[in-house]
Image (cartoon, rainbow, N blue to C red; front, side, top):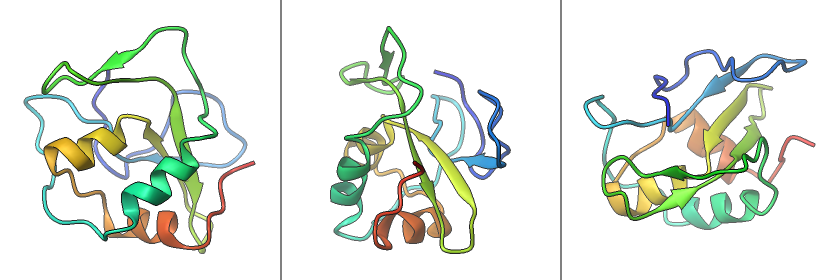
Length: 116
């Protein structure tokens, strides 16, 4: 998988409104670690039932190679900022203690508004 810094412009596909990246991690690149709100993973799992940009293959976790994912989770904040995260973000949080940016966490935890 490719590394993108958190909150950098999303450029994978043409989108009608700008998006930013969250959770595109790779070994050798810094990422914040720490506790996350207790319901974050559950909310991401719900959003993950409708993955975006699914691929025919899988992305494997570069840190442990034991987990694979495909597709993306897209969410929009109350202020209209759109976020794109790999499905592997759930694994990164759970297994590697990744802590996404606070504004992404807030967007995920507000009443679920997945990008339609």
